[in-house]
Amino acid sequence: MVIGQSMSILQLLLATIGMLVLLVAVMALIRKEAAPIQVIFEVLGLGVVAMFLAVSGVLIVSPLLTFIIIYLLVMRCRILVDIGSMVLQRGNFAQAHRLYRLALALRPDPVARASALINSGVAYLRAQQYDQAISVLEDGLKPEYGDPGRRYRAVGRFSLGLAYRRTGQEAAARQAFKQVEQIFPNSIYSRHAAQALKESSSG
Image (cartoon, rainbow, N blue to C red; front, side, top):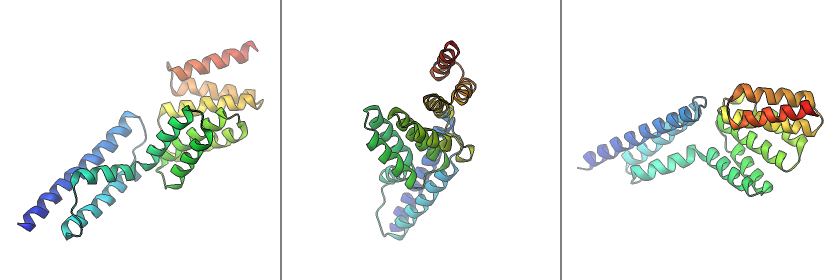
C-alpha cells in the first residue's frame, strides 16, 4: 500500500515537472525569448529533489505545492523584475533598483539578466542619471546575455537613444533610434523612435 502511494505521488510529481517545463517553454515562445535552458535545468533539478523526498518518505510532498514552490524558485528573477517595474511606475527609483540588484544577485538566466539590466537602465534614465543609464543599458543589450525578446530590446535601444541625446551624443542617439525601427517595426516603440528622429532632423 505504501509502495503504491509512493508510486502514485511519484507519477503526479513527474506530471507536475513536465507541466512546469512545458509552461516555461511556452512562456519563452510567447515572449519570443531565447530558449530558457538554465530555467529548464533548474526545474528538473528541483523536481528530482522533490521526488527523492517523496519516495524516501522524508517529506509528504503535494504536487500542487511542489508546482508553486518550484515555479517561484525558478522564476525568482523574472518575478523580482516585474515587481521592480511596478515600483518604478510609481516613481520609486531607489526601491526599483534594489529589486533589480537582488534579481541580478540571484544567479539569473541570461534572458532574465538582460531584462533586469534593461529595466535598471530605464530607471536610471527616468531618474535623469544619464551616464549610469548608458552604462547599464549597453551592458544589458550585449548579445551574450541572450535575447530578452524584441519588446525589451526595443525599449532598451530607445532608452539608450534618449540617454545618448541627453548627454550630447546625437549621432549615437540617431543610430539607437534607427535600430528600434529595425527591431520592432510598426510598434509604439518604433513610432516613438521615428518621432525622436524627426525632432533631431528639425532641430
